[in-house]
Amino acid sequence: MFVRGPITAAGYASTDGPRPLCAVARLRPGYGSAALGPADAAELVDRSVPLAEFWGDRADRLAAELSELWPDPARVAARLEDALLQRISSADGSTPYRALLDSAQHALTSDTGRGGVGAIARDLAISERHLRTLFHTEIGLSPKLFARIARVRRAARAATAGVALSDVARESGYYDQAHMTTDFRRIMGISPAAFVSGGRPAPRLCAGPPP
Image (cartoon, rainbow, N blue to C red; front, side):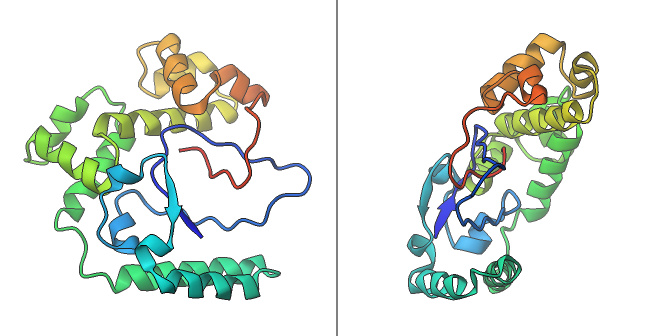
């Protein structure tokens, strides 16, 4: 069993033919320390480490339980979710800045980004440096990169829904389609047009969902 930290580039999994047996639990950004224990999220960016490094023998016991349940994917998912929720509920409280972090994430993912990180920090009555530190420690990404990934995800959803790419760029808060394409290539690995047409990169085993 492995923990995969925040990812800054998309991974693609095949939906055709036989697939490896993988169970993936995706945590809400900023909740890793509650599920894993004290950890600097920035040290896990684009990395996979054994769950045992955080949970010790408990990880091995959980892996054994899941192996016994494996013929039934629903039971595997339920047991994995239960283990994570138990860990989170038993954590010694949440980060004292949970409300600030949640509010900042909401602003960065719902806003077009024109206000900028500085404006969001002012709205939350904290310094921009404090906001950056919170994101670095609890999420592992800078607020700017977090917002960029969120914007690309929003653009990908709109594009696959059939919205014209020029409209996708405008609705996602980009200055123009060229800027959107640059960000999209950097994070998704391909252009928006290729993504929509199905020209995805070669899949990897147990690849997680796009960032």
